[in-house]
Image (tube, rainbow, N blue to C red):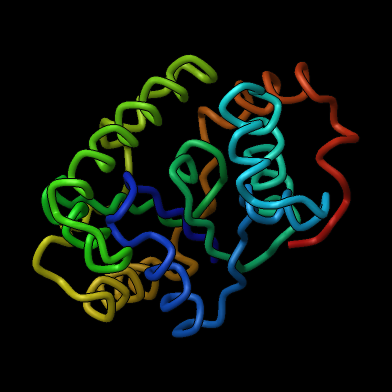
Length: 203
């Protein structure tokens, strides 16, 4: 079983992945800017700043998500682009209003709601523009998925329970589907940074 979950920031993708993985015994496939910083032995802020100027950082993150998912057998991948990047049995989109997502950020970061709302909107705009430019995909619009879950009025356990129920209902009754975006995106990544840069690390 492979599951892909995507959302805009603050809708609960990371938490849902971890809870679903634990519930049904899946491996979490993940690769982030923070991991690049750790591998290079530099502060996270350095990589974050570099990513703003160098598209190859995004290509590295997304390429390694693809290759690690390909090597895994039973896994769950959650990222802004997971539903565009990986082949899966179940595709999930988590939605939430910008106000709810900002409120979650305000609580987690201990910042005023107005500030959190501003940064959430700005982050959405930047992410949408970046992925349109890089891959021609609109992460602000719901992709073609099996289920969409509005997380505005659900807690993390309820969201995870819905995904687990869907995964169990599908089971092995349907073959894994190839992602129609994956080949084009991977070709763009390979053309930019080469296959060797994606490494041979397992998830």
